[in-house]
Length: 302
Image 1 (cartoon, rainbow, N blue to C red):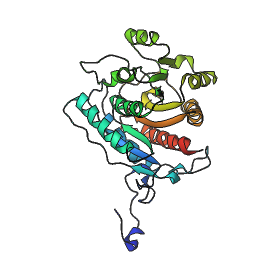
Image 2: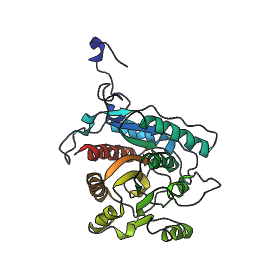
Image 3: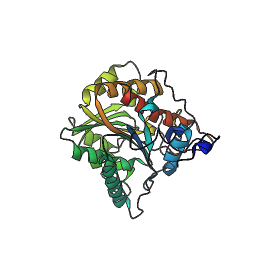
Image 4: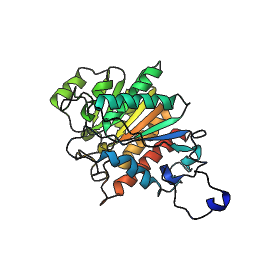
């Protein structure tokens, strides 16, 4: 809220939005970036807690240094609006994803902004991906940073499971999955049957050199949607996720990839999902908040 000048100068805590930005810097009307928290969790397997992911990211972000030495700038200056958390219906996964799609479209209708959705479980990704596929004439490539392919036709009786999210979009977009190290035989066959539509870069093949980054860029089209499941990173960095898999990606190679993607492609939007905060270890929350800030920095670094 807006306070009188006499009160605004008092020692209030930072606002509970991304980076703790003041009202002017987080005004939706002027912001070029939008943070959309979606604390949805319905189909997680093994470990839970992704419903607390958006709040954990936002809280940790309030303690990030605003200056980015890699970019030699302060990305927040483009304006970053943080939306209220979107509370989706509990009338079933399909209804929840449909409700998210309606809300996401409404946000896009407000003008050209770089929207980063914070999950929540990975099932929510299908709504923004299909929203962009419907809006754009050109074919969209989805850059999927992930430990899992998420290509199951359904999981535990739900076609809208976190394990099926890429199966829900693969007919409408091309998928370039990076960091994969866990999949079923059936998912492997799905990918093999669609070599022009689904490209997989296994984690065990990309731990040396940078040639894999060139190959990822070559596989992507000109227009990219980024979905970043934090279990794509090694669990030594982010243990706070539902299904941590050993042998994951590390920080600097991923940043090198992302910076090139943002420089050489048109990245229309992004999401970061599957963080399940652990109060005993807040470091992953801070890492993911820094990741989100990096995405904004790369998007607007010129």
